[in-house]
Image 1: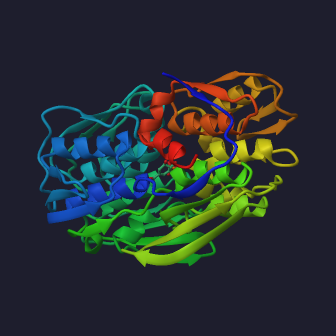
Image 2: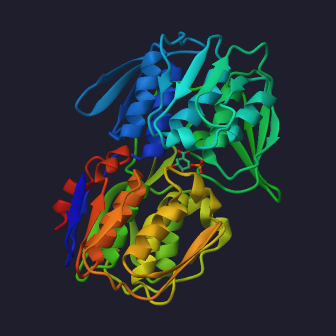
Length: 425
Ligand code: S3P
């Protein structure tokens, strides 16, 4: 589907976005693993989280959707049953990697498959450390899906230093280790999103070498009533749109402002963005607040490499802000972008060339120079939801607008994107 966007003059109003995708995945998984009834309020309606729910349905778990919440009848410790068909994870790396860790500790066979994009993404990053724990897990010869998981003779605790800055890899190991009486220690040299640790009450300690994470069966999920805060990654598209249109002022309500996710706010504030957090509070261990955004003049700044894991999902929209900010945008140290839903460095550079910018592409980033010169541009989503929404914002900021090919993929994280934009016009 081709979606057309016209230049937006101004956005104003208050907006509620869907539940945070990372937290919703975990809320669903942990509720399914716990014994007894859990209720999840404001769960993300994204296709990715729907993939997680459907995998757990195949493992024997029951989900009932009410107007306000999802009721989950959790199966309890090792209470899942062997699925009669492959678990299909759709486009979702989080579904695949997190449930793989949990499945390594079960006593039955499973196969995980996914769509074309997910089938290209690297899985050795979880297979190797899970095998060190005794997991009987195999990827294809290319290190990709399908993943085959068989019962293991013995899962043993691990003392493992993470090799990639990835919350998905970390969480895969944590979800295997919560099945063991003995303590596992996972060392994370960089900081990545810590929702798994927070939601399961896992002890962490910061040291010079990074964060030590201590996990055992004591952290096995228990039933909860949980309200998922709204998604900061989805908010980022609206924050940039409000900053860069004149006379704009918006408030995004009840957003997750966990400090392993708020790098985007910090960078945009450093660029001159008027962004304030109001009504700060803590709900079930997760920080929540309302984000107020007012039109601003932005200038490009250096983005420190240590910050990359914190802003990894927001780099597409941050680079759009960079196009309209004074000075030249540059990002480096971000080669993980090459193995996301699309090769995001290539996808972004391709779209920036289409509007006449001068682009230098590196293995771990890119820089942009020049001004937008092309008229009426057709951007490509590359089937990647964040590229589609970043291109939509680019179209809404560009004098001559723009079209986005393959726009339907936004439903992977935010099926209501267009209505939400409309509500602010
Ligand atoms: C996620 C972790 C990140 C992020 C993804 C969601 C999660 O991936 O890009 O969208 O929920 O744990 P990596 O941890 O592999 O970087």
